[in-house]
Length: 309
Ligand code: SPV
Ligand code: MG
Image 1 (tube, helix red, strand yellow):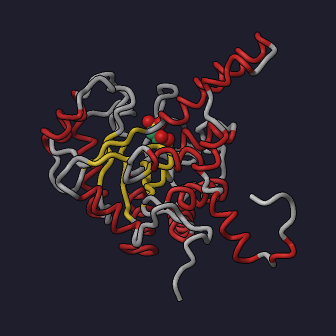
Image 2 (cartoon, helix red, strand yellow):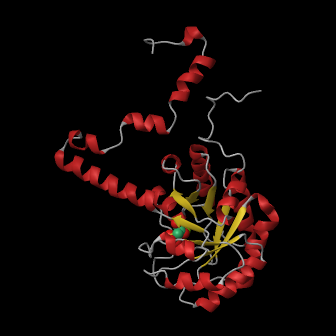
Image 3 (cartoon, rainbow, N blue to C red):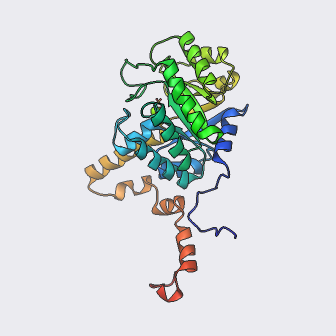
């Protein structure tokens, strides 16, 4: 039977999100993943033309009013990922933090993410609870063997149905290039499909030094702090994927703060009307038009009340 086009469904459905994400991460072209932290930000990123999303732990925590310190539960994360998937239809690489515990928690998380719309999961080599990489100076790394066990457990559970990105925090924790390479090597052996190398420096020096020596798997980066580096540098360095990790969340903060303070000061919403999205934009982003089509199909004609549309 034909799928009725007005049924609730993802925008621009992706037939195989995992394959699409794998292709994005493994392609020789530089790919971009845009942060999303709820259905609305996901729909907006989709509308802007992004082909894949990063379900950011920092942004999701912030939107829920938590700190990015393992305060949001894994079930809350799964719920958000489902909304992001439904609202966008895009493949999603989910920030799985450190996996919410040991190998058992990590594989449970991965299995649930797969069931609820995740196309990939990224696990970082820290313990539980973790804290955001840009907060404080003491980031303790997990034991390499124990973390590799978490990766293996995910791979054994989800196989190739979920893209597995292993993230090393070696540079964040103040260890050098050698430690980062050693860890990436072990994580490749444990079954990772790609390596995310993270840095908190304001220039891309250490990332580029890593990229020069790393050939085994596609490389993913998050240039939040070294944002001045042009993307051509990443192309030249054969980096595979750039994650713009938190900009819809930070744009929302800036926009909401501006509007709230103006409304409070002006005791009126008239001044901000031209600055905020129209209601029609809201309705179109979330496909309200499909409701009317569904009504025509499913409601008996005598149930339709009110003035004709
Ligand atoms: C996130 O977006 O939650 C990340 C990237 O993990 S960072 O905040 O840079 O650690
Ligand atoms: Mg994170």
